[in-house]
Amino acid sequence: MSKSVKTFLKHAAKDYYNRTVNPPVVRASTIIFKSMQDLRKTQNRQMKNPLGGNFDYGRKGTSTTYILQNILKKLEESYHVFLTPTGFGSIFLAVFSILRPGDEILVSDSLYSPTRILTEDYLKEYKIKVKFYNPRNLDTLKKEISKNSKLILVENPGSNTFEFQDLSKILSIAKKNKLFTAIDNTWGTPYLFKPIKLGFDMSIVSATKYYSGHSDVMGGSLAVNKKVFKMVEKANDVIGMRLSPDDAYLIIRGIRTLDVRLEKHEKNARILGNFLSKNKRIQVLYPLKKNSLNYKMWKKYYFGGSGLMGLKIIAKNKNSITKFVNSLKLFGHGYSWGGFESLALHQGNREKGKRKFLNLKKNEHLVRLHIGLEDPKDLIDDLKKSLKFIK
Ligand SMILES: Cc1ncc(COP(=O)(O)O)c(C=O)c1O
Image (tube, rainbow, N blue to C red; front, side, top):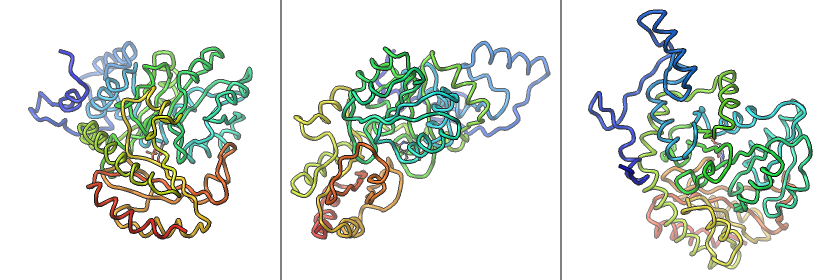
């Protein structure tokens, strides 16, 4: 019987042996076998079928992590899914699986800041060159490709500025130039957009965010197609990435309600986005306006939206933006997002210093809001009394 994703998520982790609707947490380093022959048989099975869950050591996984891998594999419609201790771990794994000294990586300019540090600063030490392209102008991507180019790493939408890119166009550029492709799909998750199905080789999600949904666990996933599976498997083995079974359990628990939460996040985000759009100082960076390029690019690829948005605010006084953010009572001030609660961050000058293609005037400021699952009326009341501080 083919079930909808919503139904699949609710039933995905039943344990028929224990007759529980949630799986047991199987913690292990050593996995014991009846005999050496039995151990070798499992290893042979694993060599023949690396996707079959034949574990011989805890670093390879246990039945708990295997269940999460299978849920994600189905959700991503991918060949395999690797689990990592953090979302950033998945980004690292994707990059180091493909690139070698002398190679070049092309990345969108609006990358998540630690990914920027990894690609711009750290890869240099491995003699890997990074080139940035303008997510709003893919000619800049075409222009940067050379004979050493190997991988395009996209983040969609971009961090803090939330540009939605023309992903098919990126894929056709990659295909023409025989480049590998990876995308950070944390904003939408494969519930809203399936990168592997569209043609990306690798799809990264920080499980810390919407998969978990409760701000109490960290994890990451890297879904791959058959083409890159062996490369990622090899890198994963030597780097030693592993998600703990306890964390996998929490992510399994969270992901059962991914659909319900994302739909409510989107509903609340649209209510708040429409409210904020009425303020003349504010441009809401969320796919709201049907005639905008962002909306068109979002609509082309996504089934829905999540709760993360940006605000571009015009103000002469930068401190007044901090005051606005500080005075919010229902929005917490802190990193990460994707939990049930609302969050607000003033991005300050972080973006201005780094980005090549950032089009931000002196009196324009970026604020990131994560719209949680609270009653949107309360969130609007909170915003109403704080917006007056913007000068
Ligand atoms: C877009 C994006 N990708 C990846 C990450 C990294 O995920 P994690 O915090 O799980 O390492 C983040 C974290 O904020 C993020 O915003």
